[in-house]
Amino acid sequence: MIIRALTVFEREAVRKFYLSLSPDDRRKRFCCTLSDDTISGYVDRVDFTRDTILGAFDEQAKIVGLAELVRGTEASEMAFSVRPDKRGQKIGTKLIQKLMLRARLCGIAKVFVMFLSDNTPMRRMATRAGMALSIVDGEAHAERELQAPSAEELAQWFMEEGLSRGEYVGTLGMVGSGSPSTRSANTPHETLQALTPAA
Image 1 (cartoon, helix red, strand yellow):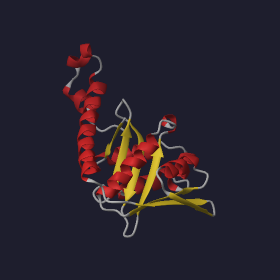
Image 2: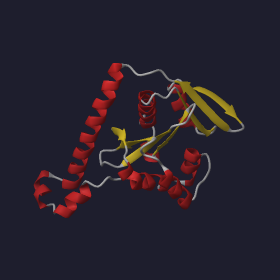
Image 3: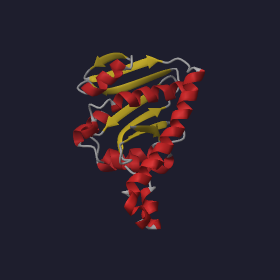
């Protein structure tokens, strides 16, 4: 499982992932059911420079989970979504752990998640992450104070980021080239397509 920070050049991959969600999954991710146009507008406003968007990728280099960290003045909000067929594989747990470390690296002192009370997977993720949980009028709120990272954690983050990008490019190459016997048959156009970020 490759988990890495996404860049502005992968905005369309984020859009494709969110648009592929069912109405119920959209409701759980955004706390309401959103139309395609509304989701597309939301993705257009995502700030890849200020905020952090983490993507979890499968063996085909396709996004199977997204995590967002939106910076705030007193606390920063996190949000998560995992593709239905990939649930139950601890992808959400890995995303929340990595996103909270990212928040600490950015000097963020508190993070929170807001979600519907019937979103059991999100509630479990928040509890496992040590977040304090409260529920009011069908909406849940989980938060946690964060400590500054250690030098070891800083080194680990940057090392893993470098490795994950290398693994991602390697995976794209394998997906695009197929078996060793057919690799030399790829045209330049096919190779370029293989290196285009997938959703």
